[in-house]
Every structure is written in C-alpha cells, then in structure tokens.
Image 1 (spheres, rainbow, N blue to C red):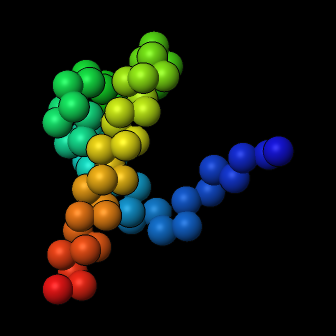
Image 2: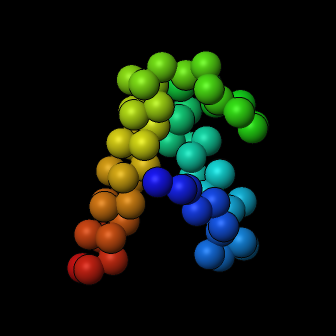
Amino acid sequence: MAKNSKTVVPEAREALDRFKMEAASEVGVNLKQGYNGDLTSKQAGSVGGQMVKKMIKAYEESMR
C-alpha cells in the first residue's frame, strides 16, 4: 500500500511537530528533529500513545 505523504493542512505540520516533541518529553523519550529511526517500537509507541491520550483529554474537556 502506498503511503500518502501529502499534508492536508501544511500549516499544521509545525504545530504537530511541537505536540509530538512535548509528548515525547512527557514520557521520557529523547526525540530529535528529523529522522528518529533509532527509536525502539516501545519508545515510538509511548510517544504516539501519549499524543492520543492528550487529544482525547482535550476533546473531553471541550465537551463540558
């Protein structure tokens, strides 16, 4: 399956990168700008999981 790497909202790229770096620091994963292929699956998954957790929390708070 081909990956579509076109960003739908180019202006969001920078905000998403900041969000990812913030989530990584919260779970103790040292991300660097650019390629992070040296991360373990566990580290990468913990960053993604933290991002989802924060997005769900923000959504739930917006519904109040």
